[in-house]
Length: 244
Ligand code: 6GU
Image 1 (tube, rainbow, N blue to C red):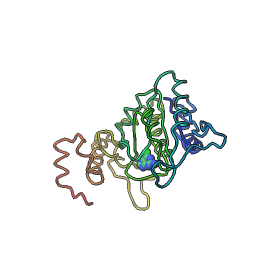
Image 2 (tube, rainbow, N blue to C red; image 1 turned 90 degrees about the horizontal axis):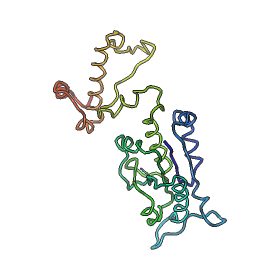
Image 3 (cartoon, rainbow, N blue to C red; image 1 turned 90 degrees about the vertical axis):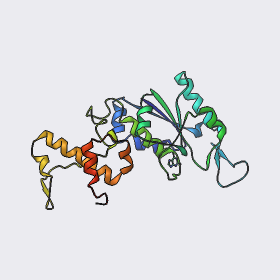
Image 4 (cartoon, helix red, strand yellow; image 1 turned 135 degrees about the vertical axis):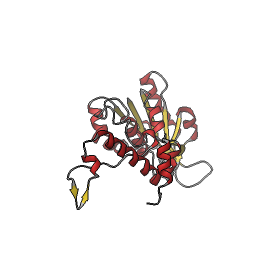
């Protein structure tokens, strides 16, 4: 998977993603990251890429042409149009289903805005997807692009060492993860749930499933609508106090 990021702060994106699992995935060439500094396409020696908004108002607007030229370079290199995500609080909210869908692409472009926004006309020309990462306002699109790239990368074959780990975890089945424990068996007088020490695999699986269902009911009841619960599990939840 090839990720391209159009940004005024390439070092921010590079520093963040060259670390940890995404960093290793790049070393293994399972993913690649190409940051493009929009300022390099300013077309003037001052590197100016923003101007005052027509109609007045606070702040500056990123101008259309540098972004258009930077994007055109990427499409020329690819030899075909590229799926292009604009990071904006006005976009569709990112989630795991969207990540799965984007992970099918071979190449993705992320456009990070700054200041008060981007000239609408270049968005009309190049953007295929408007995406937000949640209902709050950030200073720019870099962190959202990094969030999306991290999420999509771990769905790429080989990025996680365990073949199955991307499938069997939070949001798979629309249920939250069960709790995990490691050594020591007793920590500050708190014991590991005995079933996990029993060596009885079926009972362990049963307990984990039950914990997933209970946690989801307590902390993310909104997810339960999509979850595939058995009759027994639905019965169990009826008797639960969700405020625990
Ligand atoms: Cl994609 N951009 C900005 N600036 N703020 C956000 C966001 C994106 N998603 C949530 N808040």
